[in-house]
Image (cartoon, rainbow, N blue to C red; front, side):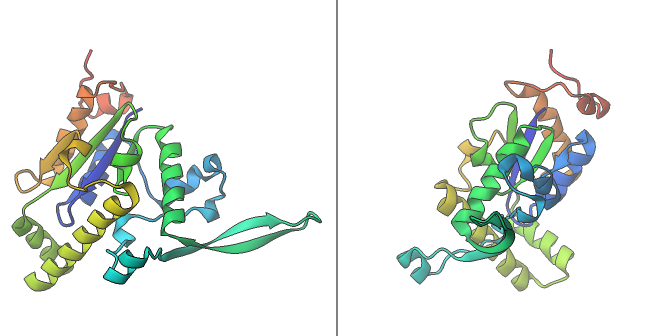
Length: 232
């Protein structure tokens, strides 16, 4: 019933590694679909679920930081009931803080089910003190990341570098603003992997094998099927 959180630099291959880990272990991938499945456990319907990750977050400008402006993120619909008992649908405009609160609640509800990979979304902080969780950080040199982004998006080096800088800045600001931590702090993680040294498939297998060395190892048939021998 283990859970794996993965934080990654943009262009390090973390997204593909997360999906490969899910394939190897038969784990679920934390996305909007899974969030909808656990919606009732946090008092919401599937249609009310909000997913707000660092991929959608941009660093605030000077005036926003100065005046503490919270940006609107999304609109969701909720059922309401008036004093006469008549039900209706109301649209709510959620800001960043409200959206983060919903994501945190959904992460905690999904954690209770186990066998899960959470990519980003502050999972390494939300589940920091929880047992049976492996926190992983994926990094790579700027040169390696530039090559990947250029290949993926078929763009030149200057455009790739600009995208990497923007996405990394957004992720860093997301963790600092909403969780008060340094995104790159090694103490947030149990395992750090440099994909400039290993390819994504090797990195995924290293993560899978690391599950055996958790303080509270979870013995699951999916691990045995994947060729992972549980520690006795």
